[in-house]
Length: 234
Image (tube, rainbow, N blue to C red; front, side, top):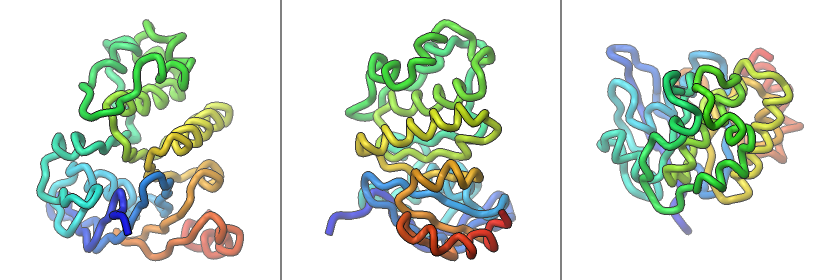
């Protein structure tokens, strides 16, 4: 049996003395879309940051394509084809959209070309020479994802993509996730907007107190809705 794209075992994480991950365990197959659900503070974003080596300290096991990364610095993890899109997006205000897009280096084979990115995100081509701060929230989110795709990343960690965006933009982002899934990308999403996440994910993992307490597939979703309301308070 092939190794999972991502495998986490017994992961603990800290910010200073604050213990935020308490034995996280999860696996994500290549080409799979997995959504981490949970209340604010449950440890979902910390899990993504731990995968990238961006929390204070961590112990346990995080394997990418079977290679242990727990002791690797962040830039080495990125070179393994892992791309992280944080909730704050990290758009540089003084650069144009295209300058933002071209800023990261190509880190691996198969990075998307500028033409392919503009075909997927026509809005960005129209706004190529606009300053980063003049882009709408949705355009900034598209730019943040597009920037990762240029690097050659195949495992995408997407944190709260739909946060604060208009429904029409959220719909476009859902189409984007569908296209990436169709192209074989592996995606782990943290998402508060359950309506956005529900049709996109192959599996859902419920996180509470820094660990996974429930998981279920897309097919099991209708029968789990009542429990989900309890877990998420929605």
